[in-house]
Amino acid sequence: MLLRLVVSRAVAIAVTGAAAACPAPFYDDNIGVEGVATEAGSLQGTFALKSQAMDQANTILGPVDTGGITYSLVTRTWRAEEPNLYDESHKVCDVENFETAGLTTVNTRATIDGIPASVTVLDVDHATGAFVRTPFHEYWAVQNLGDNEALPEDKESAVFYDMDGDGNPGTTVTTSGLVDGEVYVAQRKTVDQTGVVQGEALNFGLSRVKKEGTVLGASNDLLLNEAERVPHPNPKQSWWMEIRVADDASCDAVLDARDSDALPISRPFG
Figure 1: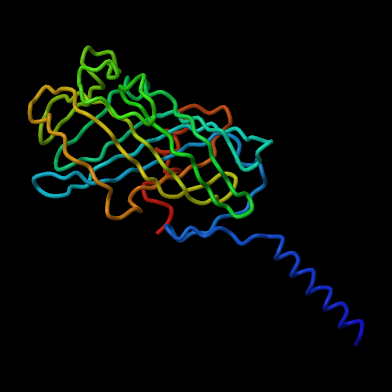
Figure 2: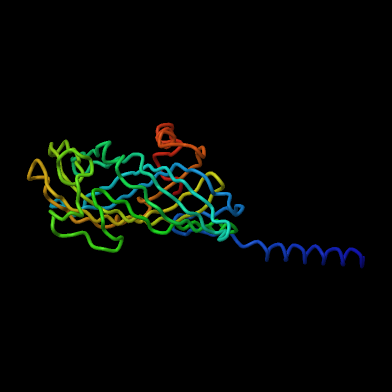
């Protein structure tokens, strides 16, 4: 009886010690999902990233949903000396714009290929599965501007340049539907992403995207309107998901993941 009591106490102490040594998984109450523990450095590699950004434009018809999806190739390198941190480079591979109040917009291939790669730092709590990216920036037809500097009000500023080389200012967006034509724009996107680790090959969460843009010209005056954009009332409409691809993958792997639904249409949480 005494031996059984001693063994029981030893087991209880061992279990209590193990529980104390293993932190509880991070629970992201924004999406209702727990993180998964992984080994330090195990998230190094190359990933296909889908980022959906949904906001609302204030129009004469009232608030109208607008936004789009960006597909990117993420290259991630572990900082062994700072084991929670990874350096990332994001290369935009494709962009899909949502139809807005009957207006369809398409970006040129030259524009997408010309977006400079963004760099950021990923902070992962490997024990709990918490995932936080430092906010990063995409620059469309904007050059020589600090991340915290305001876009110039002067549409002739040298900060804005012909990004796609077609002879028009800024980047050319083709429109159809409500108005057929071209609109010439420049913008800076600031992207803030947090979420949960789901393993060494899958992670997801919410995006918060700030868009600062200006219309530099258009082929039709009806396209010169610059509607104010505000955050969507449902924050879950802006989300991201990434899956691991081969270390030497290119944008082709990202687009294959999109076309095969490995990066699904719907968000991976409720």
